[in-house]
Image 1 (cartoon, each protein chain N blue to C red):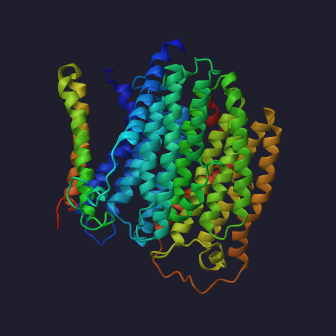
Image 2 (cartoon, rainbow over the protein chains, first blue to last red):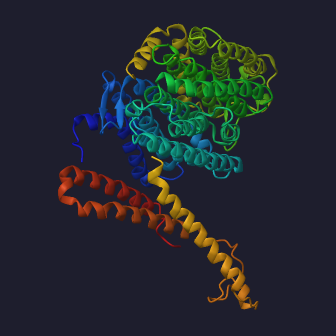
Length: 485
Length: 118
């Protein structure tokens, strides 16, 4: 039995905060009046997420390894931890109104959201393969339930079912990979696996299974088939959380495993070609499929597949820890999680009772009726397209630059071409919003949802800040990766 | 690494051979008498009523889940009871926080009325 010192508890704080919040939500919920807005739950959820934020900030600094090396609070994990906690906080803010409209204003919704966040934060700090597995499962099971939480909508149930079945299958791959790696090395700790020669067939087979499992979680082609249906069917606020949080946490674990356990030259030579293919396919398939979509959520799902490809460009072109690629991925995932959450916050705001606002054609003339929402959505879409001065531009620049600098010219060219094509489908909604006559349908008679507006404002401001003054965030990402080695 | 595994391989081969032999022999020698009772779902059991594709009240499902939950609790509690002295105070704290989480879940289920049958 290891001693439980203060380091153990300190490292756990960011995970404990949302976990205790989830329990508090479940204890409070039965005492609230049915039929009235359940604001106390929102306050508890926000409070525990702020506590998680504070804990992350408190840990920011030197690397602390605890629980016999199972958890590591280093800048790498904390960097993405901030992105995850922020995404969760914005989701809760926008859910206050949205959950009521969708009839899911219940304790389960907020507690599942917080449990998923706890799993994501655990995943971001996981330093051995078993913790990685535990974090992924805690996160995924909560998110499967969230995807199907609007039980009356058949498409939501379908999304949850598809996500769950394929997700369980992918988890099997991941676990099998962990078992093979353990069989080959006798280790689950990441930095100890790195000491073993990487040319053993058993170890390489394990690495291959891990790539499949992680590829599924971050939605890389050819493991992306669940994404469009799950993103389209899940309620908008949940979809945003899935796209931002799950992806950030998935990339955190993916990168940490690759760089710490398989960062040596021989091992990197084994996974780089495989990831090259994943990155190229994700960018091409994601971009081309997004072109044909008429449903906004589905379009954003394909765009998120393409963005997984862009982030993977940085992983391949990382040049190990010495190169800038890994830092570029961190910065990219940070900006991506904000700019993909944004459109879903707007969709959640515009949705009416029991009915999602999701057809691209419905956006026609939105700028007349809801100028603020239209402006924010335009900003998010411009950032996703990678147009300066938004954060999306800085992220793409950093990733492609790192890839080309370390000699992966082909991947950089594919990425830039895919970005050019993607401008078409990101600009089409903007054209519709500003240059078409509004339809009679949306007359904004409901009371203004201030919390949702605030969340959208924060996301928009963050994108502009990261786009105009990115140097602090980039410097932090560079520092974070140094500590990983 | 390879030589140490050959007994396992031999054992696996023996098992497959034995299983195959039993199936083959019973297939060749076994008598076959087809009667009505032979084709029932439970040849020696209760006569089935209706088909198996029926709707169950969802409450059974809830009871099953709660049963599994507290079964797992026992799985953790028994080893803890055995090594109680060696684990000391940290073990006590860990177990109690585990029980507390389960207890909160039970309380929640109870308050939501899931424990009432009607």
